[in-house]
Amino acid sequence: MTQEPVVSVNNLNHYYGKGSLKRQILVDINLVINPGEIVIMTGPSGSGKTTLLSLIGGLRSVQQGSLKFLGIELFGAGQAELVQIRRNIGFIFQAHNLLGFLSARQNVQMAVELQDTISPADAISKSKNMLEVVGLGKSIDCYPDNLSGGQKQRIAIARALVNHPSLVLADEPTAALDKQSGRDVVELMQKLAKEQRTSILLVTHDNRILDIADHIVEMEDGCLVHDSQREIINHASEVRNNHSYSL
Ligand SMILES: Nc1ncnc2c1ncn2[C@@H]1O[C@H](COP(=O)(O)OP(=O)(O)OP(=O)(O)O)[C@@H](O)[C@H]1O
Image (tube, rainbow, N blue to C red):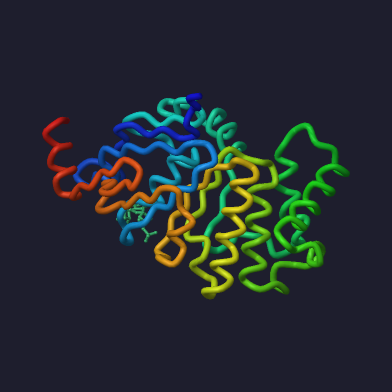
């Protein structure tokens, strides 16, 4: 049975700046993420990982090339369509981005209430259940400042997964955590992703968590230089040179 990829990126280019300051940040990126797949993206600082993540997440407009989310083309999509796309994606960031004046439950509930159709009572019980799933059943009414880094990141995971999105985008989710908490957090993400059949694209510099990936891609100077699934190994300079000839 063939299944539609969650993400399909074809010949994607991206630029920052205008005129003489215009710089190409992403060069001819091709990437497929299938349902339930965990893809880890590595690469040096400044190689374009966050830019690619933000394009896939509908947080920026696609300038050139094709980027499909569940078969829907994001090139040329308007803001309203990008908002719809973002509803199907959970986001987890390095600095968990929880709201300090809301309890754990209220932070998760905010994400649930983005769905139009849920009653307040159901939103509360769904949020509580999800916090129990991530092992925070006893901290439902705690505020983030009273919890450890690992616990805060578990709330962020609960918030990202509570609506059963097709995709979770995680940017350095273990960067602020000690070794054991980092490991626990990614193993939890892996378990929930497999149970819910959610795909994960996770950017990391942390080599200790590479083993949770089904598929590892490596960025260098705006180019995808290694894809463990497609066995592509390139040098960024070759990709950039070939690309400029084909323009
Ligand atoms: N809004 C912006 N305007 C102009 N240049 C930008 C912008 N955002 C990022 N850049 C530049 O684009 C390049 C890629 O940045 P990006 O954040 O995507 O890299 P990264 O691989 O995620 O880096 P890191 O691992 O440090 O987070 C860098 O040279 C960065 O300085």
